[in-house]
Image 1 (cartoon, rainbow, N blue to C red):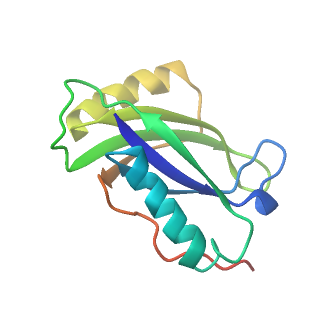
Image 2 (cartoon, one colour):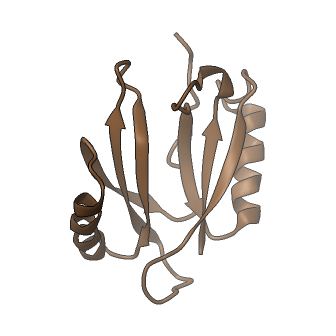
Length: 135
């Protein structure tokens, strides 16, 4: 099991859209919570607005491996008239790109989405670290 940290800006979220920043995947809930606390306290944007966070348990496909350094995640979405990503579909984590590619075809057959991607994540590393600035 891995723990996905997402920071949310509720002031920029509306209707069926959530302004969410995927931060990273962590080997423990405690590590994800510590990163969230640090970002909400010190990273520009996240500390300047009433942002919150969510930690989601993500299963790893196949045999459990505590030594995983990277995983692959499939993400599919549609866009609304404001070009916001909506109707998100997200897979479990895959230990190899080959497994993720095989699962991508299955997800595309199951869900109609306008765009798909396979994301590579380094376990335990924040993928989003710069914060943000509102226009």
